[in-house]
Amino acid sequence: MFEKLRKKLEEFREMRRPGRRRGAGLVEYLIGLMVIIILAVGVVIPAVQDTINHANITGTAATILGYVPLMIVIGIFVLATRLTTGGE
Image (tube, rainbow, N blue to C red; front, top):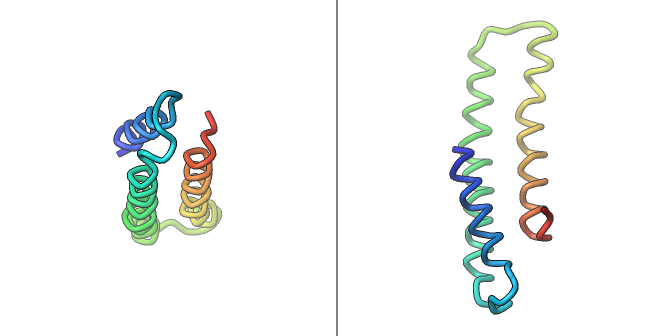
């Protein structure tokens, strides 16, 4: 799955290169960004949460694993910010 995200990131960077018209790929860019966010939030987080809930883990390990979905959300925000601001 991360390979697909990496390919999309490269496509977005390619659209932002000099020489390409500024507004030409804006709609495609935003649609791609929304698709990435929807897939990550709608598929990855519930799958991770379900796996953690059914793992029969208790104590400190369960507390630490409870923060994994939060870290995924933070990663999604960082990715979206980097894509929209053109950060490298």
